[in-house]
Amino acid sequence: MSAILKVRVWRGAAEGAWQSFEVPREPSQTVLDVVTYIQRKLDPTLAYRYACRVGMCGSCAMTVNGKTRWTCRTHIDKVSGNNELAVGPLKNLPVIRDLVTDMREFFDKWARAKGSFTGGRSRHEDFEKVIPASESRKQADAGIECIGCAVCYSACDVVAWNPDYLGPAALNRAWTLVKDERDKLGLERLRAVAGDAGCHACHTHMSCTEACPKHLSPTAGIAGLKREVLAAVLKGDL
Ligand code: SF4
Ligand code: SF4
Ligand code: FES
Image (cartoon, rainbow, N blue to C red; front, side):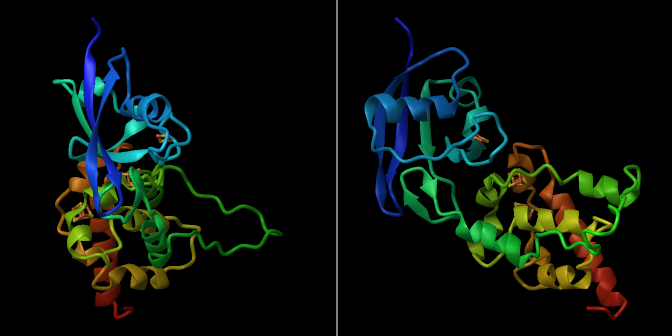
């Protein structure tokens, strides 16, 4: 007889309860496959979110056996040696229902950290070129593959203690723009990340870096922001 997974799934919002399901174990099964099986075969009222299923969109992140993960690329073999699984919503974000969190404050913080590119050329001018081997381009490259999944944000203790903290993803994004030679926002972005809720609130715990499914290091980017802010303060610019 094939093995059965005993799965507990969070139902409700901030107030709620765990509900148990039994799901047949399959080869190469992912956590997202298990949640999808429950929704399609056992309880169609289960709310969850995903889009690409191939690790690109960042929408399928959940808490799996206590750790935040992208569920479409997390195999059951990796997280459930004993055929038991607990799947809950991301931490540090309001729960709308079941496994779906409200991502607004996560993305609002990207805006607060000035996380959008601000170029200096018009459409009539030629593209600005960046030398791929330049030091600043290499530093930006190290953080640029973020998919906005909020796994790091959910894993960060400082976000839990201080809900105003911009968090690892928004600060990582700001760092890639600070290191983008084409971007013209300069001191305005440094000012945005320098306050009490900005880069200096980071305690360098590395939880974000350990959890990031894209193997980025927001911790390193945040350390870079601290250095840039300090340099601007010493120069009297901030
Ligand atoms: S290194 Fe900083 S941003 Fe990352 S989890 Fe720790 S406190 Fe949060
Ligand atoms: S830094 Fe990593 S964990 Fe954080 S949102 Fe981007 S891809 Fe996800
Ligand atoms: S569904 Fe798109 S990253 Fe998982």
